[in-house]
Each structure stands twice: as C-alpha cells, then as structure tokens.
Length: 311
Length: 299
Image 1 (cartoon, rainbow over the protein chains, first blue to last red):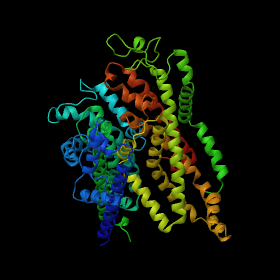
Image 2: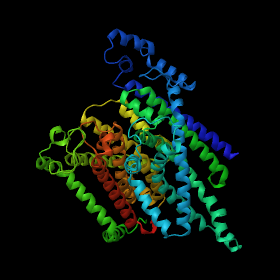
Image 3: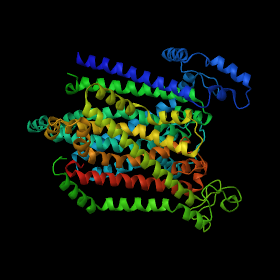
Image 4: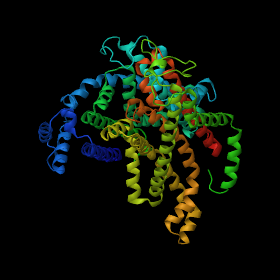
C-alpha cells in the first residue's frame, strides 16, 4: 500500500517539476532579447515580413493566451517547430535519438559493470591493487572534464577519425566508431561507482545478518555475492538515476568532439543558430527522461527495501 | 565532528594538514598557476604579443597552419597566429576567477538556503528542500546552454557574470542539502535548546550557535566546488556559450583549437594540462582538508 502511495507521491512531484521547467522555458522564450521573428526571418527580412511572422506565431496575443496554447501543445506532445529549418522539433529529435541512446547505453553498461567490479574488489581486498587504482581513478574522474579526455583519446588513439566533423552514418563501422566515445563517457564515471559500491559493500559486510550468514558456515564468496552485493547495489542504482541528467549534458560535448550525429549535436548546432525551440525541446525531453528514471528508481528501491518506505 | 573543543580540533587539524605531503604539493601547484595568471601582462610584454593580437606573419607557416613552440612563440601559436603562452596566462585569470567566484556564490546561497530550511522546518523547509532537489535533478548543462543562448549577451563582463550565476545556481543545491542535514543535527543539541530557553531571537541563535558548527563542513564543500565550477566554465566555453571570444579561457582555447589538434599538439597540451593540474590540485587540497578536519571520516 505504501509503495503505491510513494509512487503516486513521486508521480505528482514529477508532474510539478515538469510543469515548472516548461513554465521557465516559456518565460525564457519571452524574455529573450533576440525575438523569434528575427531568427526565422533572417537579417534581411523587412518590417512587414517580421510583422507577418509575429502574427503567424501568435506572438501578438496576450501572454496568458500564449501560455495556455504553449501548455496545450506540450500536453499533446508538440514541441513546436525549429526556427531555423521549420521542421517539427519532435521529429528532429526522434531522428537523432537512436545515436544518442546507443552512446549512453554502451557507456552505461561499461561504467556500471566496471564500477561495480572495481568496488567489490576494493571492498573485499581493502588497500589492494584494485583499491589503489580506484583511488587514483576517483581523483582523475573528479578532475577531468569529459571533453578533455575525449580530445586526448581522439588525438592519441584516434585512427584518422574525423575531428569535429560529421562522420558517416551510424550503421557503418558501428563498434569502431563508438568505442572511443563510450570510453570517454565511461572511464570517468567508473570511479564514482567504484567508490560508491566499495563503501556500500563495506557497510553491508559489517551488518549483523552478514555475520550470521558467515557464522552459519556459508563460504565467504557466497556471503559477499549473495548477501553483500545484493544489498549494496540499491544505493548504486539510486545514483544511476541521479547521474542520467549529468550524462545528457556530457553527450553534447562527446558528440561534438567525435562528430556523432545525435541529439547533442542537434543542440550544439542549434546553439550556433540561436534556434531556441530545438534547445528547449531537448531540455524538456531530457528533464522528462530524468524524472521518469528517478521515479522508477525510487519505486523500485522502495519495493526492494522496506526500510525506505514512508511510514 | 564534535561541537565542543572546537579550538583544539582545528589546531590539530592544521597540524595534520601541514604534515600531508600531497596537500603541500597541491597548494604549491595552485600557487604557481596563480602567479602565472597574475603575471600575464608581463608575459605579454616579454614576448611582445598582446593577448588578442594575431601575428599571422610570424605565427603561421606558409600553408596557414600554426607554428609550434619556438623562441618567438614559447608555447606555440594558435590557428589565428596568437601567442598560446600569453592567452593561457590570461585564460588562467578567467578560469580561476569564474571558478572561485561561482563557488563562493554557491556556498553563500547554499548555506543560507540550507540553514533556513534546516532551522525553520515546516512548510518553508519543505519548499526549500524541494527546490534544492529540483535543481539537482535538472540536466545542468542543457539548462545552462538554454539560458546562455536565450540571453544572447555579447559583452565580456555580461558573459562572465552570466557564467558565474549559472554555475552558482547549479552548485548551491548540493551544498545546501548537506548544510540542511547538518543544521537538523546541530539544532537538537542541548546548547541550542539552552539558548532558545533564554529567549534569544532565532536569527541570533543561527548566527552565533548554529553557523559556527557547520562552518568546517561548508569550507570543505566549497573548496571542492571550485574545481567543479572550473570544469563547468571550461565546458560552457568549449561549447561556445561561456565567455565570449576573443576573451581567452582554457575551455575556449580548447574549443578554438578545433580541427588543428592533430598537427598542433600544443593547442591541446597547454590549456589541457593547465586545466587538469588546477582541478587535480583543488580536489587533492579539498580532500586533504576534509581528512584533516575529520580523520575518522576518511575513506
């Protein structure tokens, strides 16, 4: 019952955040010192053309009317049209989404597996080689911006791949093209997850029920993996939900460096054109994705661990 | 960390910090980089290359590619024929100033929000806590890009101010949450209850009794915010939404290097190394301060 209540509570909160962000987006559109008709019409548009564009966009209506229309459109999944090309923003994003999803998915698998493995090693063999590697990696991970690592990887290991240029479509040489971007995104995150897994494991391994399991005569290996790891994974999974937002930002930079034609490049291109609807569409969708991910994590967490359920 | 005997604790903490060799190395590195930044006009005078001036005749080869380190350009030239050494020094000023300012601003806002939320409790706490949760859940870089692109600011000072504000906004929540948690603990201590029993006003209790007890925590968190802010600024400028060209910052220099990296390694090596050294030293120092203040909490 309380899991359901938590789910509803979180869902309402998620809707509220989404409403808040979309209202901010609407405010930004109106506060922008560069009016939309300027971007659409271009520098040589006449005053008459600009007036026509304004009327067409409904920019002369009262602000509350515009706000209502904006929310109604959003609710029906319409993110508006690009100011630069006129295409629907939703269609532009849908076209680029697979590349970004592959990038994120591959990197996530790498860092999750690598981080948990290093963390378990560090916890079971404290002050061993894995533990020391993790300490160095944590420091490097906190200190290195992903784009610097990406640039270094590309300069040192890149084999004639385009730098800052559009590459061939994703289907060609998929693995060869994705390996370096995956590494650039994952290597720095591995450290955070290793540290998190390690401290969670150490906490769990000190608990009474783990000692009981050992006293019952279960092997150390079995206790570590059956009891320790299972309980230690919950905070790690929670962190995963939190990090999705940061990851969305990193893809913009990684896609720029490696010339991947994903959503990040769409945003970067939109920055140079001042194409606000595209940037805002991506921001809104990413916020939605982060909220949904966190909702799933919270609910799964509560379902797995009775201690965090609201009383 | 205990509230009582603060003087003694911080005294031994200072002694512990001074014995830490990694911390000493980090502090020396930061000092060197700060001196390098402060002496920027001197580098410009010695080389005869003002920061934003281009010297295509001497800085670029016949085919238009930048020349590497030489007696004329100590750390090479960039694709426009500008001096990388001079720009790196002026860029250091921007990177350090933005990082420190944004971290201080975030610390101020975070401490205020966390203290008010933790001490006041009730509806105000719920509101502030939710606000901080929301700020943490937003895709930081994307929202920062949205703000920077919407308010197309072209002046140098304006772009700097906006960058600082954006970074501070996205950093205050993490600190605010920790401060709130600390205040919730401190609030229940007997000496606070005693102060309340004497009828002291809440504002006075917060300033005199609560804040000194969270100050150590805030100092550690702030020192760890500085490298994060420097990285954030570098990323924004790399994408072209941070400081405006021709103003140099390490991130902007990395972005401007562009396609020339493969043949001109110094365009990546110089700002990249400076950026990494700075953030690494800041993190090492922050970790050392944290360990020195509470060795029992060390990992």
